Image (cartoon, rainbow, N blue to C red; front, top):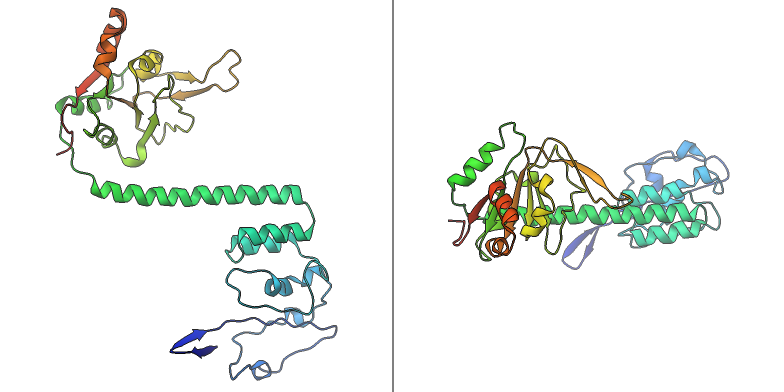
Length: 304
């Protein structure tokens, strides 16, 4: 129905649920007209409903439950006390965004059954919804930032390095972008593959990359940001992108070990102090790093 409130028209939507111990029917909609407005639809739930029957009380609970956006509700029979509330009714309203998680928790507690499992499910659902909302927010931010990103300079050495990964080889060199901060090294590296195909790993103060979420079918480029030369030396096998499984997270018990397949994947190291670290290493280590890396000195911005 429509009602006037000052200069504004407010649309009011409401439900009415009636129950009886005997059979009853409405002959026409006029029997349910309220303030000059006839109902849009009448359902008699089989024309008969017993208030204390849990299987028939879903309609009563739908109107009595603490729904989001509800202004007022009143009932002659109270849920949880005068009829049993089924947990599935609560879940249906929660998943349909008709009940807040806080209200759903209170309702699950009030119905008293199977609480350890139901509350654990609710906590998991809330956690997953938080992750979902964060993913949407991150995607929105990334989309805005990508639209602001400046074009990058074309570098022949980098183009040749990218092209080399299209060939089948036993091993591949890794790319090192080194230079002062704010020259665009990280964003330049991420521009070498589609946005969704880049895996960025923070290597500050770490000797081993965390690749537990790596997917060889999705990721084409692994960016090891703030990675030291020493960390590269401890992962020689990984850094050559060989055609074999690479074990990570190893220990004496291997309780948390896992394997990754990174063959022909582009591995990029971003560092501010690569040359300084190289100069303080032994000749054999210097030779290995020089032989297996394509080093780009980013002394000026990599973007135009």
